[in-house]
Image 1 (tube, rainbow, N blue to C red):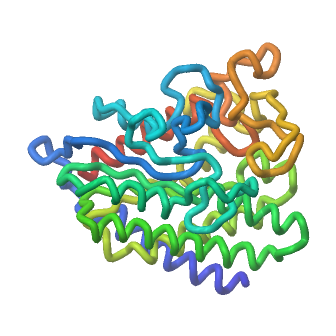
Image 2 (cartoon, helix red, strand yellow):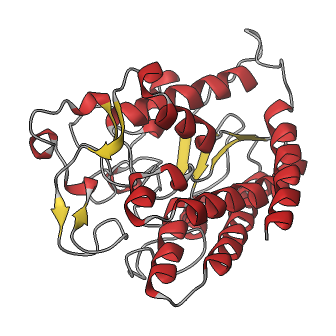
Image 3 (cartoon, rainbow, N blue to C red):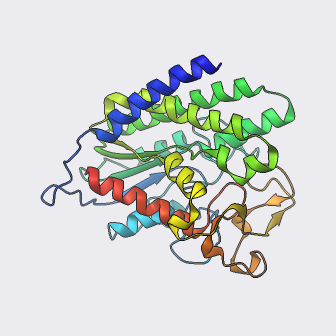
Length: 317
């Protein structure tokens, strides 16, 4: 598999370069994008609280990266359940059901986009954020842990999910979207979940496979699609937390254990959807931690990634 993986890495690099460099230099003062509205789709990484909680330390502030991007443009962004334009829903997979905790009622990213497209026409200056992949990798990882799937099959399924997400992005472009930001999973091989389960290699391969196949499938849409590399940014934050005003990029700061399915990595695990400033490690300042639970970031982690995403959008459009 290593030779195929190297070949795939070459293709990924070519696709990523095309997407990242397309329209380079177009972000001038005269032409900078002023979005009319921001519309978001995704899973728990982008969920602004469809059911009242977010997957981070719920401190009532700007604690999700998509909201941070919206703040940069001085625009509101709230979940559709509260009358807004963020369709992102925790546990959502790209096209597959059930979700990563076994719930078939959770709308997939495809279904989220269906719901949006049913509301009317796309505006000329609408900015779209499409994020997915973490829930698909969690669901596939559970199958590997249960022995019902091999690690190689997990990577193949992750690559297919990446292509599926590219297909959903293409639907938006075909419907008239001109500004679409795409964010796949960060490198889950660097997550506390991977460390605790000794699955760093398979999770890194699956994360890379998802993003790689997605990029290859989107390469011809480089004039309308911007890839924001969560894997790159989180790798940097994990490796050098001090460079991002943090001190701990290894341990979850929350203590909110969920006896149920929680975030999908098993029962009895920390669930940041239940986490507040009152349920963090004794004596810890969660503002200096990267991870809230074993998968999802703290408000600080969200903030740093949101600032990075906003800067990428600004420099592009």
